[in-house]
Image: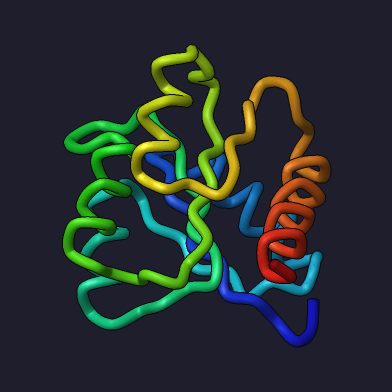
Length: 130
């Protein structure tokens, strides 16, 4: 990866946002965070266009998959890589995620923060070179 890639991390847990913000910052990312889907959509509607959107699924008001559906429908941040970071990994969750065009799905409980960063980099690098 050259330069700093912009990543938008979306979660409803401030501690998760802080932890991943620090980890991605330490790995040469320009980190932006949103406390929930509604805030993330507002940022995107105001013209923010990250290289990567990393989102949880389970959030109040609007879950991460609903947010991704709206992003797709409203053509917000079309060129962003969309990656799910969630503890929800049932087949129906994966199917719904594929339907909105995600680039990757990481199960939070099975990956350390450093592994999450490595997986995001890997997904981004592989898909970018296609």
